[in-house]
Length: 450
Ligand code: LLP
Image (tube, rainbow, N blue to C red; front, top):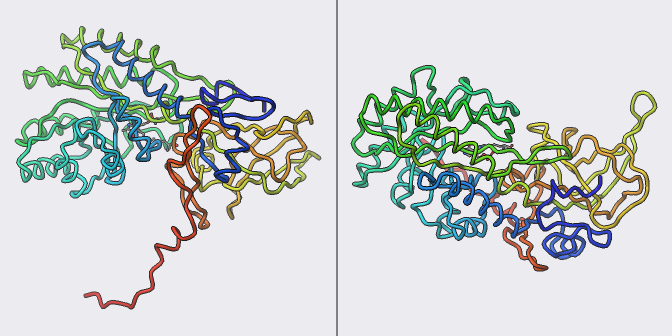
């Protein structure tokens, strides 16, 4: 329950018994902007973008491709501007994410478009704005992209998403490169090779390279190593068959971050230096030139930068078997602003943010305010026994897949996101209002549909 610098953002600290982020007291932030509140440490976000950018550039030199920030982890127009200004790319996987990037005037030639079932409208939009690359995920999509590119009078650069058959060690729901998944073209089944031949023969597609993403919140190197090795093997087969080399390999994201005490973190420079060594030796083995290497970190950039502030509303002691009790501490948010514990059994930690307490910790569970037993923020945590209504709890590392997966379940209002830096705070996504919710309700006369 103590303040753990390794799970909080870079500019967070306990000062005079209170959590301060980016020079702003969290009690003042809660008062000014309300709770629940996502507080992004802007300096940390920018630092992390730069760390990944520099790590790729320094370790790959002329073979450095692009760092595409995975916007699904969290994006808003303001965040897209930070990404654009830092000079890296952005990965979007829906028309909505593309719309945010375009609203931020994101340079189209640094936008990469993903998605396993892009609509024709999404593909046409991507082609019309001139995105850097479309990552193709199915045979139908090869035909669609080719046809829509021809209609626009363009030749579109594409990568093929490859499934290298890797069992990544992470929660099954966020593991993406074993055989039985909806993503990509499998190497083992021959689908990858068929797709390569098809794309190579399509007149309005320029096959630039291969892509893979093995999963998310991964720490073990083996998965990354195996996927990279198999992709380079496939690139070598391509060279043998088509007598040209592929220009780019995009190795996706997935780098894990620390959520609770004892979790590891990745140092971008170390990760990229190991990857560069592997890519060089595999390319040498297959007598290939080192292609441009791109990566797509999402969580590793956004995750650690953000802290959620909740206000405690009620507490309740529940007797468990064996005479032990558990204190339920209910906060003013829950599964609508953080679905990860319910969906992936994700673990978080929390601290009392508004004061210090010397009262001994008791076995506690932090829950939300939804009508669900599974609405749990933290399943088990020791928290001071005097925590009660009005106290402020801070949950670190909620920047990735928190606000971006938020819902309106129980007609909850999605929380605001504010950016803090050097003692100032500003709203970058405002809190939803009841008017926002009600704006979708329509009373119309029935229309005959034939
Ligand atoms: N590239 C592609 C093609 C992806 O599908 C993803 C994530 C990423 C990059 C970024 O992965 P990251 O570096 O953030 O791990 N909602 C889940 C995570 C789903 C990830 C989906 N794809 C969670 O909350 O853990």
